[in-house]
Image (tube, rainbow, N blue to C red; front, side, top):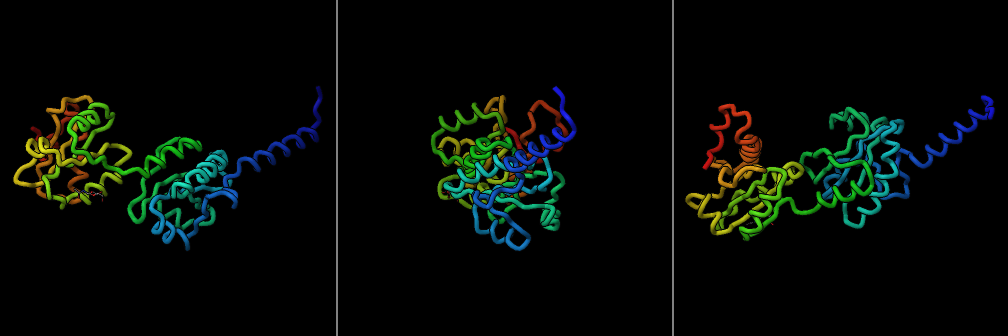
Amino acid sequence: MQLNLKTITAVLATLSLVSADDNSAIASPDSAVVKLTQDTFEQYIKSNPLVLAEFFAPWCGHCKRLGPEFSSAADKLAEKDIKLAQIDCTEERDLCADFGIRGYPTLKVFRGEGEPSDYQGQREANAIYNYMLKQASPPVTSTEDSAEILEVVSDAADPVIVQVLPSGVTKNNETFYDVANSLRDSYTFISTSNADYVKKYTKKSNPTYVLFRPEESADDASVYSGKEFDEEHLKEFIEVESKPLFGEINGYHYQVGQRI
Ligand SMILES: *[C@@H]1O[C@H](CO)[C@@H](O)[C@H](O)[C@H]1NC(C)=O
């Protein structure tokens, strides 16, 4: 078979036209994807509880492949009040610079005014759908059932942080939920007022946190002994105590948390 240059050029032109149509990086105006700009971004993020934002460039190949998957996920998630938005970084340079966008596409999960977190799922419609549904579920499992806590702890592949609240004590509760929201991709969070936990882990009606590391005995759990219940201390406790007990020990370990 002989192909002359003209035929090849025509075939290539058709192919690229077809793929440009099917795989556009820019969502069709008919889809549920919202296009955001410098002027609309802040207000939109503030007024929607959960937004997955795609920072992209129209020419980028990965963005073109993601385009139809993103639109299809957006259409399905619209019913769940989860919004998907696009920011064209070739038009919104300042906005993209504000978020330190270096590669395309970059996907970030926004919850109102807090810091966004990076999307860590696959770039495929179903995966996006499932990931965002999980993001919409409560970040903390609240339970008084010690058997349920043990089950979560033994099944978890990540460290599990349990907030133990003596009854009537709620002063650190909001902080715990905020931290759980921002770290939900890497840890599991539980809150309990179970009497056995309160007796075993708390002192003088103070709340506390207990961190269980995967594949370690529950007896080796770390118990927070600090007096501060702000976000910074809780995050530091989680980060430091999540390292395996018999892994690298660096002295700093012992100053922050107390093991029982
Ligand atoms: C802690 O805060 C969460 C979320 O706001 C709420 O649902 C829960 O009832 C609170 N728990 C306590 C013990 O106040």
